[in-house]
Length: 320
Image (cartoon, rainbow, N blue to C red; front, side, top):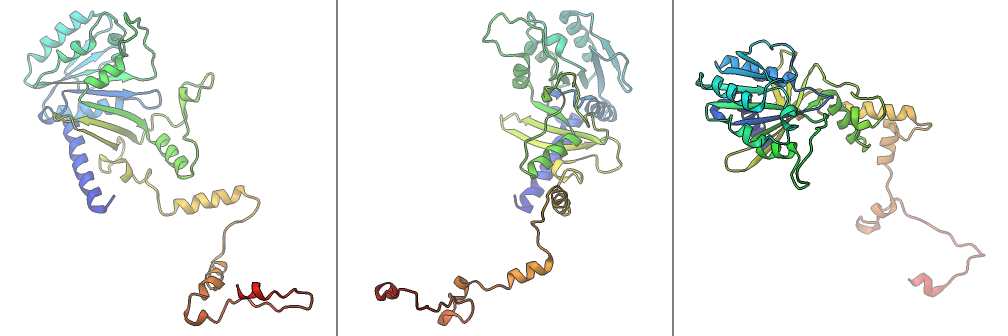
């Protein structure tokens, strides 16, 4: 990608993610956050809460698994013992008292596990031009749900189809490990449950405290989709949001290749590299087929052969 195209993409997508996180102009009525055991969505939810408070948005937090009320919340609803009908009435009542509201659902699994509940319709009824919905789906937790028909898609597929923005969170350390493996043409490493090793639930370097890697898929009103990778700093005074490829820890540094080469040399029993003198000497060698391209056939690099008495001279072969 050219420098001009990269600059345009960087400016456009950074403005877009800022608009989505700030909930400006109802850019995304329904945002679906998909997390795993390797990276929780809590840092991203906290980012939504901070930005919503700065623009005087009423925040309604629906708790199915959060034991305590998060800081900065206006309304905290314990939904574990509520039926979907009662919870819906409570939410409609709360959003009707504010000109601008944000509903945050810490997990959709209790609702998605109810086969009798039409989850897309239930969620769509909460969204309005004055109300935005942000919900979390835990990808590593299995649903205990019996479908009435084998042709009914699973809840995650329906939610991904319904959402206007899908945000998948990843661990920075694990993304760097995948990048280094790709640079060496190695198999992509897996972590946690995907290792399929008995007793391992969470992999190494999960929930990196330096920040969150964000995989975004946003759908405009025209239906056009925009995909991008971001990095959000959580404990740094640096610029808050950058493209993942602009992150200093993720992007390939000029010295990275030399460091990797040194590591590979340590594992070998012989040296395949060249010193600077050997490299200069190799470049100074004139090969016969290069010298023959000069006018007059060249003067160096020619192959001379003196026939001996035991050689069988063939005139026809010599002419060829």
